[in-house]
Length: 102
Image 1 (tube, rainbow, N blue to C red):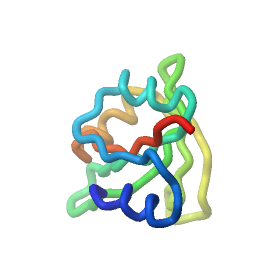
Image 2 (image 1 turned 90 degrees about the vertical axis):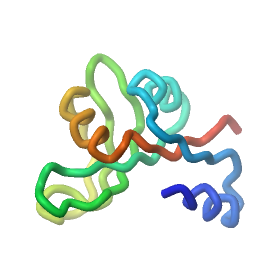
Image 3 (image 1 turned 180 degrees about the horizontal axis):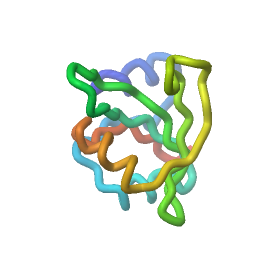
């Protein structure tokens, strides 16, 4: 995921940066006005890193857009409890791609 900001810059999207070990508060601040791409990792043996879009963190819930949803169905938007999100995000080393202001 460290190289993803380079891909965005190549496509003309500026101000994307890679962040290691973000906190949930930092993610909430970053997604107050922009979305972020984060890496999550399920608890299943052999689970790999999966990228999702976080559109916000508020009232103990994380707003998610998931391009590869549960059961490999179509993309979905949903909210999950912050505690449940943190389990998978922490297994993915709490990494994210954030987008700066315009």
